[in-house]
Length: 353
Image (cartoon, rainbow, N blue to C red):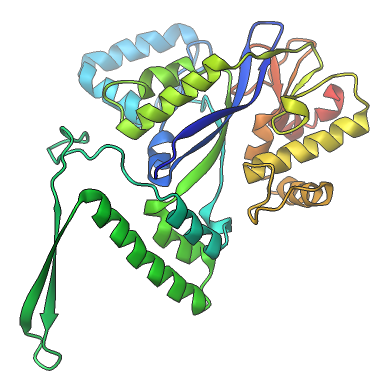
């Protein structure tokens, strides 16, 4: 029960020394919203404050210093950690794609929560504030009133005492029964699967060059315990991986060719590989949501849907090419990378194939 894993899908090193890494993560869905609050505060990029507009880096520290005169250090630390200061955090450091429960067939979703239910690994005791107290193993007491059908009066009460884990799983089984009933009645999976999310996992693809701020905040004693474990496993996976040295013109390409695409391939092959890489990123897998392999035909179909206007751009963020000349097409990637999304949006892809 409860899967928290991190696997390196592609790991590349630019001549500048900038390491671009793509990881495939799996963790409880209720961790996902917390993880998405992370934003990068980059000192080498213009920052944005609503009342001031874009700021050069020379003024950023001055503004933060002024903020600290008006706020406590604890408040600023909390805001940075919980991602509440979007005005201070300009660009996301991490490019992400996540498997949507709206797309997963109901029978598969039910089977997943039966076979691998997400169950808390840390059961913190209640206390004031956002963070739980010390772990508790208190039993969960359930009370069910048996009422008279005519008067509604309580005739007697059934009392059951269960362990914390058993109560969590019993509730899962009850919700599964309702989900199956909704499914039999013909309701759509985007509605039914919401019922199952407390026990479901999510698969996420994440790509970045800048990780230090994320790990500093998430692998921290004050971080939510499941997020801290995820961050630790991400860090361990990256430490165990050796990035592939790339040349100018080579591509970082998760899911295809072992994660890299050499510059000396012909243009048609490069284009086909990019289509497949984008389709896999959108599916967060080598397979479709139905569990079938992504064929060339399936990849082309997925890519065509994504590339229509408005552009569904996030799956294009996980591929990048080592630029031959200085540019401003890296977006949230640092160190000489040109991000595929930027190339598509700027109409410059042909120059890098």
